[in-house]
Image (cartoon, rainbow, N blue to C red):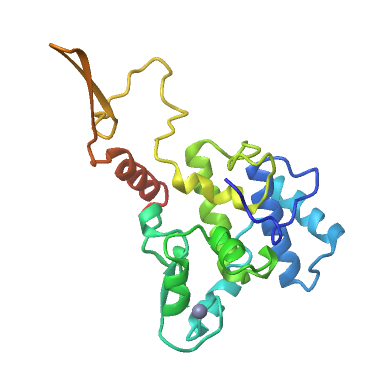
Length: 236
Ligand SMILES: [Zn+2]
């Protein structure tokens, strides 16, 4: 998969995992809020505090609420026309219909974003620098995606999109996962979910020998299960 890397920044070498990257991106948001955008020492201080649990990462909540209540303009482009809401994590990818996952958004941006991952859309479609993403939406996204990675057991992963680099484009890859990750389940316990979504191979013996017929079932219990598990996680 080729990714446009022009608008993403490689994090410093201390940032090695998805967990680190989420805290690092959040530290950059705090720096922007505090007027220290690009100040490496300030960012790494906040990063360390977040990582060690000495700083709660909900301290942008007040700012989020203010921006949200003000919001009769699009969070992404600023347009005051045709304003509705965008689900930051798309409903089709397990996002919820709750304020944590909503920002004011114009119809044009909503259509353009569709069910794309936020950073993927911002960087690869709009060709904007990752650090120009509005703070309110980036902050909400980072919190949501942290919980989803925690649920999937991927917080300690070092690269999820297979390009051998850890960037914000790795964060949304977890949303496309079609299989359930069950890190807490007993290892030898057989799967209890019916395998309806699998491709089945049936063998029939006939005059010509063994015939193989592949059948597909469009039911996808794994996807629904994932959404339900995320909803339970978020206490929805
Ligand atoms: Zn817009």
